[in-house]
Image 1: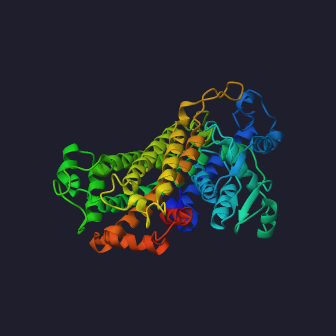
Image 2: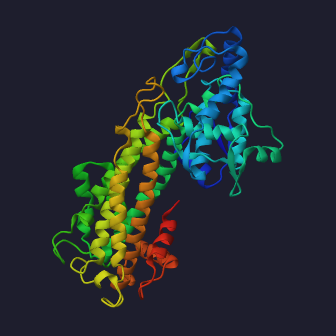
Length: 492
């Protein structure tokens, strides 16, 4: 059970909620904060004070006052009009993460929403009722308005949800559960959609998947290094301590652990003086990607526990401030950085694949690892596929955050495009997984030619895991199936 209080949620806990089915519970002290904040909103409505989003229009309409009897209708109209998401829906994991993160942010008690609305989100997460949320349509500032509006449509019974793998109208599901759809009241629609939870939710899923791939890339690279009779000296701790990057030293330490006991690795001068960069510089290249992951994790965990809506209510309603915490620039930068860091893991992996299959570079292995070179092409086109994915990543890695398009009649004149960056990062990560799957497939085959009895014990265990999923190349076959099965093995 993960207790949510608005300030202590971690990526490790999100991993338990998303991948292990952990349940969530609202912290009791947080409930009190929420209720106090709600009382402040109700007092503002009663007293007729003019406060943005409570009794005014939105965006360019912020100067238009709304009558007290229309403030609830204002919130409903907001959700309906802003539910302009387009395209394919986010994966269920991301939809689930969005609910958890929006709930956690609102528990900080700065938003003026009723506790029963948050308890419905808690119920949806624990019952695995996931809103259908289109991926496209967010500018990443003023919050992820379109995606979060589709989340709210599920709450109010006007959207679609996925339950037990089936997409259904939310109102039908509420009827089955014996529950009424939520009726939004003053400020609640705005509180629910003014936030960065689409980009942050996608970012959390991205990070979890990227971290696992970064670890996997090391044993895969170690298996390639063995198969190419690589030089172990380059991983000596003195080399990496001399530079001073912790992540680089950590990668070198893990590489030495993977390669311990190998009878296939060599030393300087035994076969050659030094290896190509794709082997020799594994700690430097992979270590730099770990630096990126560290930056991304830090920014995500801050945003996961941040109040990102507008306006924010302080001092029991005595201070209500319109600010800009919904602006996604910090996460936009983090996602663009993640795209670069993960793209490079695929870049260097593809170069190692080339060395494994190229008879001019693979130190005596069969050309293209073919069982019958010439008659059979072996892994020739697997390298093509890896090169194609790497090239695609280069286009996806173009930073989304350098773009901005004014909206709401120039009231919202700078936006982050962070949700686009997060979505593109997810696509890159899927490509990286497949490139690494290709390297693992080729490295396992090459190790078989070298002699699996000579492998490092830990890498032999990994080789056995690979072989339990895909067989050796004994003849040409449809290799795409092998790659997809290995890619699934590398997923969380």
